[in-house]
Amino acid sequence: NTSQGYQDANNVSACYTDFACPDNEPWILTTSTHNGSFKCTPSCLSIGYQDTWDGSHKYCYSDFQCGSLAPYARMQSLQKDANVTCLDNCTKAIGYADYTKSSNLTCYYDFKCPVAVPYAYARADGTNSEIHCEKECNVFNGTIDESNINATWCLNDFTCLNNQSYFRKRSDGMHSEVLCMSSCTKLSGYVLNKDCFYDKQCPPSNPYAWVSESSSQTFCQSSCN
Image 1 (cartoon, rainbow, N blue to C red):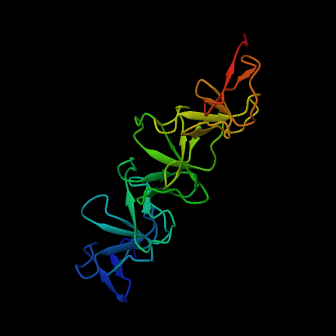
Image 2 (cartoon, helix red, strand yellow):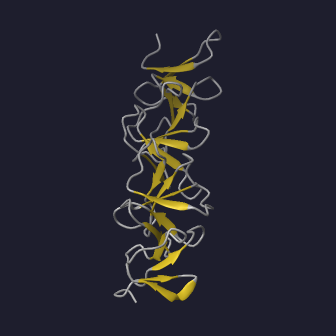
């Protein structure tokens, strides 16, 4: 039992009384809270999450969660990994963080967001230390930039990247989300500064739609004289 030593997962009659695992079975099979029995096993593939946070032991968490000292489960965004490793953090250089799950923090090392939480939540100026995945992006938490091939960006500083400088919105302000666009042509909408009104109307503050055959855009302005 736990007070006597570590059990051998492949040979239940063996009990390692020095509370260590042999080199040919280096993984300690236990839970993320380190409760219950401790068993030695040669591999952790598909049977739990790997944690080597303390450097001297290799823990395999059979409850498929990570412990409090290394809470992020490193995996692909498709979540089909046989080998999942526990990390102490998930910076933007390591992957995309997901903490929408109640049971586990996740770090997607392929720098993509899964379908369930498709928006990569970050700052347009790049000063954020991490990028995490969110379920939705609306006028309350950011602007949407769909130009990234790996994820739909939700820019929480409410601006757009340099190559997506126009804000796609409604002229009456009744929009649930604002999208970033690279251009705003006559077909796309009406232009006011960097706003692109896709309902092709002008707001009350600048009610006149200024049109010119020589211009590819239609502009909103305050007067017509």
